[in-house]
Length: 187
Image 1 (cartoon, one colour):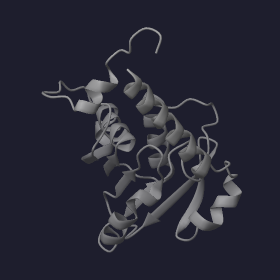
Image 2 (image 1 turned 180 degrees about the vertical axis):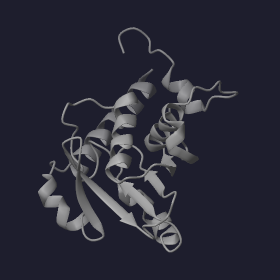
Image 3 (image 1 turned 30 degrees about the vertical axis):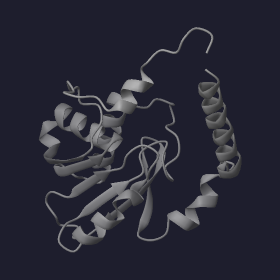
């Protein structure tokens, strides 16, 4: 029992030390823009929000590639992909509401249909009727939901570890199993 208490206490101390050494105050968007919003970044108004966007490659591409980032990320997630693709394809990436330099949603609503509506509003703003829509994690979930609700707007999907799709796991990682084990009363 003392070993368990020691391990838990050690983990708690390490967590506090990690937070104390890594914590940084939140910075205003205008302070971050010079570092992350340089050309070819542009800022466009969509649904009343100032959206950080990069639109590179041939502008006459009939079906541009639109890439959505995951949670705790930004359009810079796709820098490598954009670099490789922009010679032949139009590549569009942007910071989702609440991420990167786009800032918070005006109504404070996120997820599900709100994200899909935002993507469609951005496609409309850019006059894109049909695209190849790709996403990672959260962006992948938004991508497949957009394709499901607006199939005429999405030619193909590129999903990288997309979230949200209901699935029946054949096996469960040990860490997930342990995280679900209830602690004894009083812990």
